[in-house]
Amino acid sequence: MEILKGKSVYKGIAMGKVCVLKNHSDSVKRYHIDDVEAEILRVNEAKEEAINQLMQLYEKALKEVGEAHAAIFEVHQMMLEDDDYTEAIENTIRTQKINAEYATLTTGENFSQMFASMDDDYMKARAADVKDVSDRLVSVLSGAGNDTMTYDEPVIIIADDLTPSETVQLDKEKILAFATVHGSTNSHTAILARMMNIPALIGVPFDLDSIENGIIAVVDGFNSEVILNPVKEVQEKTAKAIREEKEKLQLLQSLKGKENITLDGRKIDVYANIGSVSDVAYVLENDAGGIGLFRSEFLYLGREDFPTEEEQFSAYKQVAEMMAGKKVIIRTLDIGADKQVDYFNLGKEDNPALGYRAIRICLKQPDIFKTQLRALLRASVYGNISIMYPMIISVEEVLAIKEIVEGVRQELEKDGIPYRIPEQGIMIETPAAVMISDELAQVVDFFSVGTNDLTQYTLALDRQNDKLDDFYNPHHKAILRMLEMIVKNAHAHNTWVGICGELGADITLTEEFIRMGIDELSVSPSMVLKVRKKIRETKIQ
Ligand code: PEP
Ligand code: MG
Image (cartoon, rainbow, N blue to C red; front, side, top):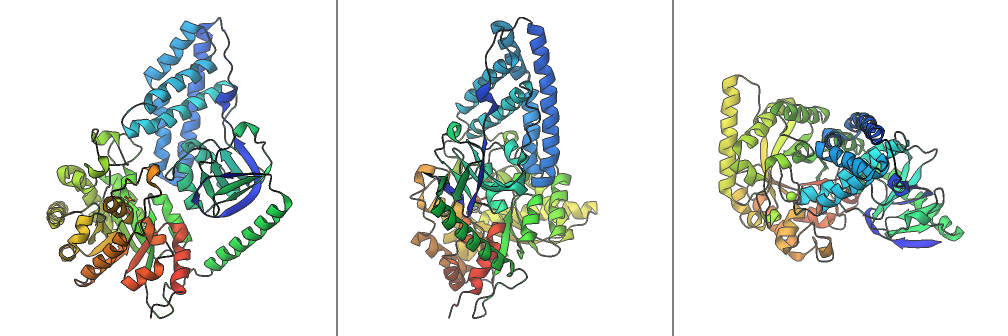
């Protein structure tokens, strides 16, 4: 038995056989070839096959995880078609007279290192994509075929890290848990695990070569550990914990259709956060009362150019229609800081979190903003949409936004295009917005507190920096006092208040939130029923 510690990104417990995802590139040998042209032809044929695989993956991802996440496979196709990349492989074959597999592997490694050493965080993140693309080409050249993984029974996936294409290829019905050596809290693995409601650990120091497929393991997200080859007593203890967890989840199912009401009659709305149209399925499955945060910037990520008005209109309309009259709060684009997009040409900034982001871009580049607003006003005809503006620091900003909205309204009116002016609110995620919440409450319909950024800006702690994990404390008295102040100021002007940051799902604070008078909590879909349970067990008076 071996116990390895990691960092839990989604709590839960699972036990089962292990499937270790090993890299094909580990087994590639270097050998001399005589016929250079034949070797280059092999690369070109493999490239075509790899592009075919990526097109199929794109279609699969489009259905399962939506356009924003599927777009990565289009980016991979473009990387494969890049002339510099192909020429570098050909040159290596010509000059060193070596086999295509090895030339592709080393070219991929060189390109990936080049990206990893760039200053720009977005370009740095592309290093993993280059490696992903080149591994695919190597695997086609090695005759590994289409690498779609299939298993007879549900397994625990153990890997170095999971690339976007690996996560999409996984047969989601057959995964018990994830555990990876690398990856961050916001990696594809973590996001997928939260959506799928299964335990996941990152940062586990596995020696992948020494783990055999098919051995039994336990992934314990509560204690942040993986146990390989557990002894009988541990297996029995785990089986009991899994049974208890299952019973708890079943009990939660019985809460579907029930109200979010405390024992002494206080009602509170519990909504869900989403990033794409396809996430609505999780919202409905978990019986959320609405969508409290649709991070619309995901429509802008992983693509080459701005989404058109029609593309956005169709996405917003679809979500509004699927939610059938329930509230859908769509946040206007929150690009910048950690969410970088090439075609915005934002340039490098010394302090991107304090930089040109979110509403600042919208106010400085109103054409981008107007396209989104036109799509939102048009889609509002088809359901109960609200618009929410991020990163607000002043009343003047809200007034400037309202002027732009009015301009868009007049244009639509003039063109005879159907529209509706929806409820409009702001995110409270800067200390400035908290301090003037009495004034802001008079010019908006609602507040939604973004505790992720509010904690970052109040405690002066970069939320992306994992060295600061121990200091990042959203329970800090300063944050809780700010929440109280926001609610008091909002309610004095009949403005309702929600929380859509991660803190909203923290059930150790649910009672305090209700006591403060918070009107709505918007949480990840997998947390909706857990929060409902907590509310129903709470007594305020
Ligand atoms: C927040 O800051 O709390 C929030 C909900 O927005 P995001 O996490 O997308 O910045
Ligand atoms: Mg935020």
